[in-house]
Image 1 (cartoon, rainbow, N blue to C red):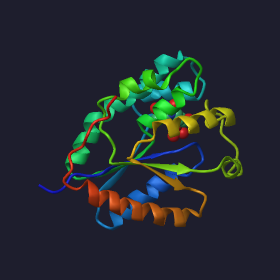
Image 2: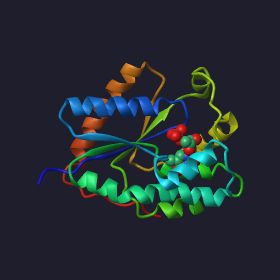
Image 3: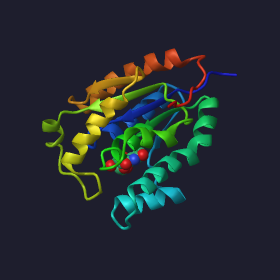
Length: 208
Ligand code: TMP
């Protein structure tokens, strides 16, 4: 039996370059014969994901708590796939995970971090969470927000402070204010260390 894959999560406010960097990392790893796949949450391709997508694009309205649980259910419906892939040696590079779930929902009035974290308990814990950090002055120069819910500066500020409350020793803050290629090189070398350290360690689960 070979080694398991590593589970690496990218987090950060919108426009920090997460999706670009996740995809570049997967390509670079595959070129080096390290099996890796891209995953993203919300995964809008599933039945639950379609409801989430309709909510984000403002086609439907849902109570805050209900939509929070749908985001979480979207992770739980993919949990068996995550486990199987990791066990078969595939590393997963995940674009947003439970931390986005909590940071975004808890930025709403009447939603607290603890309540929001509860449905995430028991999901596979990542080997590392890379938070791509970008100062507001820089992110605001990276083109306007789209039309989706949450793409509002005030809201993103609250999300950022929630991310900081969720920080554990697994987190690494990465300054994203550099060229795409320089950031990629930094992430690649960070990956190498995480990959080495995760060898032989069983996957843990998210706890209270
Ligand atoms: P995306 O732009 O990465 O597709 O994410 C869509 C939005 O959904 C983004 O504003 C972050 C938000 N989100 C949540 O509110 N809860 C979650 O659990 C996740 C994964 C994302």
